Length: 180
Length: 158
Image (tube, rainbow over all chains, first blue to last red; front, side, top):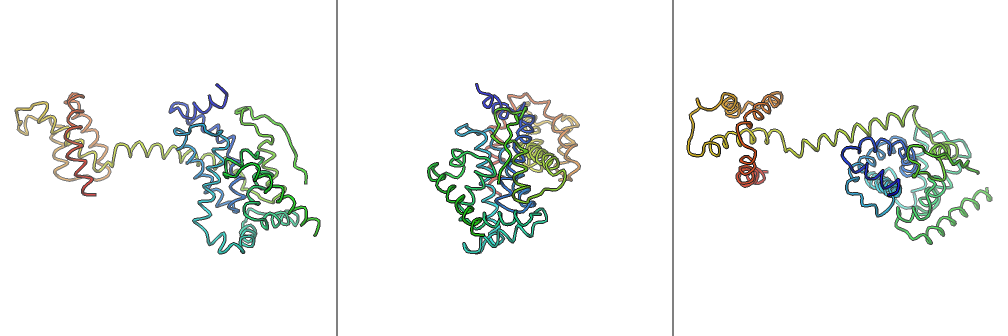
């Protein structure tokens, strides 16, 4: 039995679950927070989504069948919760495809917990100007340190497709930096 | 832009090591993207999450036992009915024969005096009244009477 399997058994058992869940929080709270934060932008919204995410994780532990790793499963829950939140608060995030980038930057600049300097804001602008798919893949690969295989399970996109999306995103940033 | 890459093992869950440590991911987001979090946020958030999952677990235990306002009087009625029918199937004792704790329970139900703070007292009375009934007799009665009569009626009303 692998270490992860043993840990999952602890998470599933009523006797050890709470202690094991606290360890899981220690390992994943910050990772999932940053993953969510990039998707929903503001700290307050990220906090709400993060709490919902961990409640879902806790409730889903008994039924977790280990078809994917614990790591990927949790990221997928976090991603889906973020998408659910964005869909529910549509008007805050976009009214049409064209104004996604503007809304993303507006939300960012309105957030009291964003204090980006010129370079950081420039990078945020470049990221926001990508297509939604490019942005998601780039954020997960570059900032969240997720492997293509893991991103493939989270987004349900083939690995080969992800790689081409990612390299297009990188190219987009390089060209924009060179042009400016 | 270069990200710093460290291979710091997470001593608590070593099998969950990524290439980047939590500190690296933290720094990436703060230094490259300009995000910040309130001081002490993660420890506060951890406590809130743990409190919420514990509260939800406690709530589900209560929910499993059903709505208190419905279930406690039903449980009291079951205890009384079993005492009257199963325990003494051929006799309908007078009110004087019924132990005082059961008669008190009947009185409370009749008076319909079910204020929130009386639930604890009522549940104690029910617990004591249930001592008069054998477990298997109670199980048979619940299966036969409660599910068919009381719960289905309740569902029909709601």
